[in-house]
Length: 69
Image (cartoon, rainbow, N blue to C red; front, side):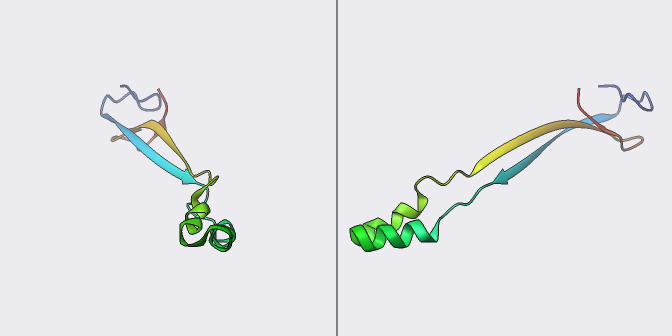
């Protein structure tokens, strides 16, 4: 890959991961625990949308410019 800024060919592919959302809901866990007992505490994991996004981009070792291909 060639850098669009300085035209150097010393670029490296970098992956960046980003997570969002909640892994556990205490309110849902307590409601499930009251309704179904100890097994109901696992209801806190139901419906929680934790998502992971991966972004790939190139970084030039010469000038430090970050760009997508």
